[in-house]
Length: 150
Image 1 (tube, rainbow, N blue to C red):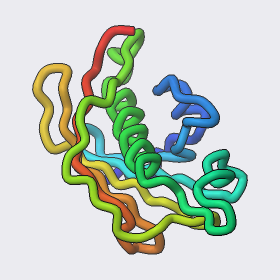
Image 2 (image 1 turned 90 degrees about the vertical axis):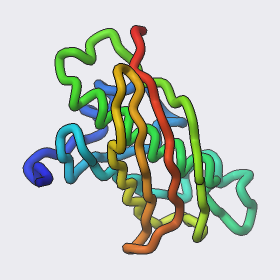
Image 3 (image 1 turned 180 degrees about the vertical axis):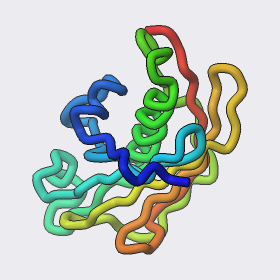
């Protein structure tokens, strides 16, 4: 069951993962089920640096950044789950598989970044991720990450 009372805001997220502007792509994490799943939120605005060149006159969020946002959600969720054991640790993205891009993401969209822990063996975790806008899938992928010392 999700911990509906727990929401990680941007300050919490920055305390869990090292990403900062302009590459920090998660604004909030909610619907946390410790050790199982969580949902990240990314408010996509026209002020994003990548819209200057992708594409002028037709702004579309790069698909690779949607996948990165899913991975950041998974990393922050993983670090949060570790609690005090996360000190001096970092999560490294390892693999991306079966990535699919279904619809463009544009300024004004709110990305819901749903990540589920599929398997964990030692320091390596495998996730499935689905990004949605207004309940419609815009992207999905399977990916893995490794917890390592800083």
